[in-house]
Length: 246
Image (cartoon, rainbow, N blue to C red; front, side, top):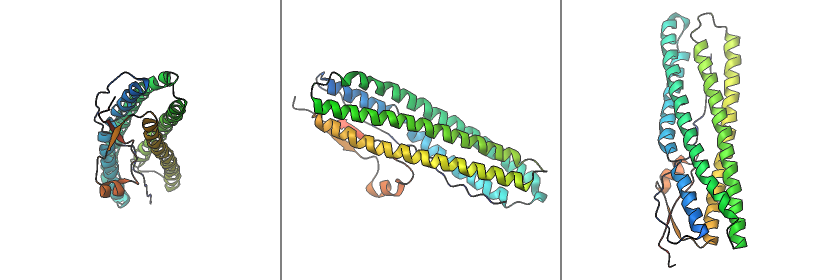
């Protein structure tokens, strides 16, 4: 039997340093909610790192399993049990991620109620466009989470099947095909999510510029590190408001 799985879930990493805004202008209040929403997503950083490590461990387990013969069935069962523990841990971690995203969405929803109070039409239009993209991004994450959760269930079924001594090759092959198709859906959902993250970053910068909110953009890694990781993650950028002359 042969199965090659290729996926590292690419959830973005967010760490932000917030500074107090001076004044109570609507746009500055929106800044607070926008950056707090990003702050509430920073659980992703830890969970992303740990999920990638667990995926690598599971892939190593699978590699060992497919190298074993039925004469070593006890070892296959032992390794499959380890893989099931690994999957359960990943399920717990993606639920932590989901909770973090839900709290971020709740915080971000405060922005929608404030857009109508913006007096400048250009700023209002830019804020509305930014908000729509961010809400689409939250929806895209829900699709990603659902797809990944389904794939984990199929993975769990796979390792349960591998503990059956009378497992037929055709049954196994059909399940592996279904699992790989499921992971392809995850990859596509992740691409959509990352594209919306990039679009949101751009629109948020444009909103800050239109509203004349001065910010500095911080990087959490060097350019070379960023380049090496760009196929695996996409992340909203960190923004810290600078001192204003107002």
